[in-house]
Amino acid sequence: MVSSPQAAPAFVRLAAHPLRWRLLTELAGSDYRVRELVSLVGEPQNLVSYHLRLLRDGGLVTAQRSSFDARDSYYHLDLERCAHALAATGAALHPALRLGPAPVHPASPSGPGPARRPAVLFACTGNSARSPIAEALLRHRAGGRVEVTSAGSDPRQRLHPDAVRVLRERYGIDLADQRPRHLDTMAGHRFDYVISLCDRVREVCPDFGDHSRRVHWSIPDPAAPGGAGPPAFARTAAEIDTRIHYLLPQLTPQEDQP
Image (tube, rainbow, N blue to C red; front, side):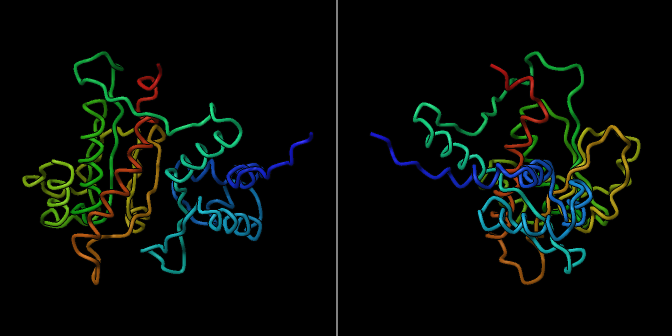
């Protein structure tokens, strides 16, 4: 008896196309605008836009209007959704192939490690919400394995109270005594990753040399006028925490080996 063929899982059908796989690969490292993706993959804009639409329809990619130029949009790969799709794909082929997200193994700060810890700079405009949240969460999750700081192009006088509150209440992190810093104070420092969290600061962030990997996370400002108050900060912190979960294995890959 011949069994009836089953359709390939949606993730396989989407990711198997060479151009869509290339787009997924590029977006796995940073959020990009269409014209940047066109340059990266070397294909016409109409073709790139078409395949981005298919990836959006499949729920793997989302688009966020740029806060710097509202006529533009940043595309973001939902790594959490990809992880679940990969797990379902493995299980569809055979139950023993069910996959899960790559684990992040905490390490003791006193344990063995590289001679120099990787250094990360988070940047946003005011350094009062998104970037200090990212700084605090990466420091918390990395357990001393990463040097991390944050700064802004136009820093506010103090951290936003809702940013301080969400970190204290949901993550047990106290930032009450921290003050925003200017990006100018980071001059001369070496960073392995420079991660911008707002579209405006991406346009003005200083160059920290060829050794720095530039990454952009297009995250809406939870303190924007007309925002949702504390719930917006909780959503922002959760999104940043998810991105940090997938960033950590890139920062310390040798510690994720069995």
